[in-house]
Structures are given as C-alpha cells and as structure tokens.
Image 1 (cartoon, rainbow over the protein chains, first blue to last red):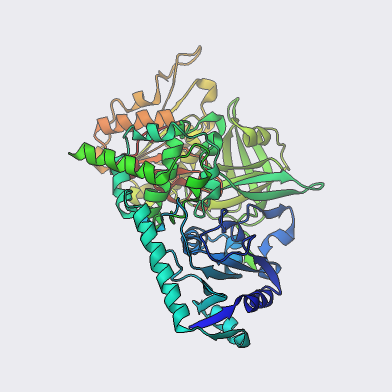
Image 2: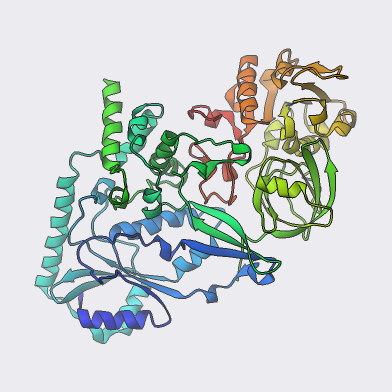
Length: 332
Length: 273
C-alpha cells in the first residue's frame, strides 16, 4: 500500500492535469462525504453543442479536440453512477460520441467517505462508502495525506511515472483506513435501518403499479426538477436547434427533466404524462423498474442528493417505505 | 474520427403533393441513399426550426428517394407546410424496429388506419403488395373525419388492382354531402370481418384514442394480444434510446417501436394516454 502526503498530492494533480481540465471539490476536501453537485457534467455536459449545420466539419467528431479530464474526490456513488450511465450512452446499438470521448479521456481519482450525510443510503443499494472499482486512483484520507491505490492501468502508470512522490503506507495508516471504512458503513446501516433495501423495490413497484399511494407521494412535489438535475444517473436530455450566424444553426443537447409538464408532450398538445402523479411515478419506475429490465441495473446510487435538493422535502427512502408498506398491507 | 449521429443527411424537397387540406406529402432526395424498413422512422430537420419524427410513406424498396406524408399539427410541421420545392431539409435515421414483416408471411394481414395514420401504413402496403404472393391476404381498412381528409385517395384502386389478394374499404366519421360510401368510425369496418383470425396479424396506426378502440374491437373479434401491432404515439427525439422522452413502460419507442406488439404493453396503466 502506498502513501502520498498532501503537498505531493497537489504536485501529482498538477502533473496529471498538465494537458487537460482538472475538477476538484471547491474546498479540496477528500475526507467527509460526496459533494453537493454530481460529477455527471464532466461526461455529459450540461449544454453540449452536438452539431453545426450545414457545416462539413460537424459531420465527424475528432477525438483530438477533447481535452483530458481529471476528476478528484469522486466517491463510490459517483463512480458507480458513471458505470451505470455508460450502459446507456456507450453500450448497445448507438453510442453518444461526445459522452464516450469525454469518458475515455477521464482520469478518476476516487476518495473514501470518512463520514456519511444524513441523506446517504448507498448501503441500501448494496454498495460501500468507499470505491471498489471504476477508478484510476483511489485515496483514503489519513493523517498528513492519503493512502493511494491504483484501480486501472492508467492509475498504475501514473504512480510509476511519479514514484518519487509516494512512500510505503505504514501499518497504522492502513489500520486507521479500515476502521474508518467500517465505522462509516455501520453508521449507514444504522441510519437506514427502517427503510427497504433497493433489491426489493423492483418487485414492490411492479405490485404497486395502480396504487393510489403515488398520489400521496406526488402531492408534495412542486415540479422544480431539482431531483433529476442533481441525480448522477439521470441522463435524459433535450435536443434543440438554435439559429446561429447567418445561414447556420446549432443543434444543442441539454440536461432536461421528466418532472416538468411539457417533457413528453407531443405536437397537437397530446401528453402521455400530463398528470403530476404520472411524472413523479415515472421517475421512480424509470430508475427502479424500467432500467432494470432494459439495462440490467437499478439506476440509483443512494447518494441522497435528490433528498437534499428537494424543495418539498420528499425523501426517496420514505417514499419507498410507504409504497412497500402499502404493498405488504395489501397482500395480507 | 467518429461519425456524428446528430448530424442530419442533407436532403432536398423535390416535390410537394397536397393530399388533403391538412396533409401534404414531401418527396425528398437525400444526398445519399437511405435504406429503411417499413415502419422505421426518420428525424426530419427543418433548418433553424427543429426536428420531428416521421415514418416514411414510400416503399422501402426505393432508397434514393423518400416520401414523408405530414399532417400540419405543430411547430415543425407548420414550417414544413410552408416549404416550397427546392427547399433544403435534413434527415437522420432510420430508427426503430419497423413492422414485423417476416411474421406476416403466409398470413392474412389486416391493416387498420385512421387519418394521417395511413401514411406509415402506406410504406407497409407498398412493401407487402410488391411481394403480394408471400401473403395470404392484405386487407386494408381506413377511416377519416370527412371525404376531404381521406389521404392518398388517388391510390386506393391502384392498390386493389396490384394483386388479387388485396382489398380496401374506407369510411368517414359523420355523413357528408355527396358521400355515398360508408359512414361511421373505422372500428365499424371491423364489425363483420371475413378474415381467418387465427391466421392473421393486425397492424394499426392512427390517433391514440383510435388505437385504443381498434385494439378493444380486435380483441373482441378474437385476436390475441400477440397478433396485434400498434404504432404508438410518444415524443421521440434522439432516436437512439437515450434522451428518455418516448417511454411506454420499460420500452423506448424509438428503439423498441414505434410499432409495439400489444402483448408487450397491455398491462401498462393508461397505455393509450
């Protein structure tokens, strides 16, 4: 196990990001828990111009034009979110080249959570508050610096090229890391004990398809769209065309929210999800049922950002408990 | 270099045919041939206005030209209806699965269309008629609001003459002066079906409310859900199963449809909106 002190860590970041972009938490804290905002914007830009038309230069995408991206301090939930969204954007019949190139050029430095937030529930998804895969390097905060592990060839090469910045981690540092990890996991288990585990939810949702419990859950929603914008696995977008200079127009892909009224509205004002309940329900079903069927996984990481950001204080865990209780009561 | 899937293929509007007071057919010449299957759809760009999804109404056996028949109903279609021949547009696609033509081989194919819904079905009709001997029968039932809104009027005889196993019946919703044909909703054409239902596949395209009642009627006639294919209506934007607008339950219409087997969607609440 390797150790890097804080000064050398900053040197390493400068070197790794010499020819690209560097994303770090504003306070550069790699202890604590996840950042307020998700990291998805580093792969799927909030507003991404995808084509200029008519312009031959836009017919193909040159990978060289994309800069390397180093992100620092992504937590296990953030890294897992990338793996999930990759299934939609990269795997399958069509690949979104903009997303794929940015992902290919991404160097992820993960970090252990040394605490958890009140809204954190990654344990309910069966995940750990420290990254186990999907990172290039992972750091665990210990006194004076970080324990560092490589999780990919790119990560190993980065260590190899900067050998002089690292030393061997001492046993008490490793022991400290392991103690912190299990303390955070214990705390998560305790704070989420009352809520159903995610693996139960696809079946529960399928049983609650026509239950009016959804009206109760949706009643508080103010349709602000915060939950979808802040969700690291919400990938849906709007494509629109904007007039550019002269004869040209620009096609833009921008984050969008299925919670707003007009999201699925068609020409002629037909709207299959005109009712708020149907939109709120759609979000839960999309993440915990539809994507399980179409992409083989629940698209939720338990980061709890939707809980923190909700103006109406809707807590996904409580919604699931409500639905689950209702389904169980109905079965008796 | 990677091909940009969001960049449309340059195309020119060669001709515009007025089908009804609200429907026009646009004959498009793309800068390179576009191979598609009947029922697959294209994203049509009007430069500076935007994109909208349409299923071609022309034969999938013609690749160098493509006809798209469009009802004036929203922002992009308004702009399309204002175009003149020679206008430049863009095409992306084809997307989606298309009609289950292989499953129709040797069977009695029942085609039920309403209004501009006959447009995607015309592509299927061409596809079937051009190979008519492979199907036991091709039976077309079509309804429109009034005689003026009957789409492709000039072609009905052409279709029934093309092969001995093609029949066509139409109706209008309410009586109109000078109309001697059938009156009543399109479902009334399914009242006395002389089709061997156990050996049939039914496909339908039209407004959502029509699809609902056609489906109920077909079930009533004895069709089983796996024999019914419906062109579902949802907003389709990216065409690649990513933008998340066109869900019907767990399916993305743009990749799994837009024609969905009723058996797959029958348990979804409010599937017809």
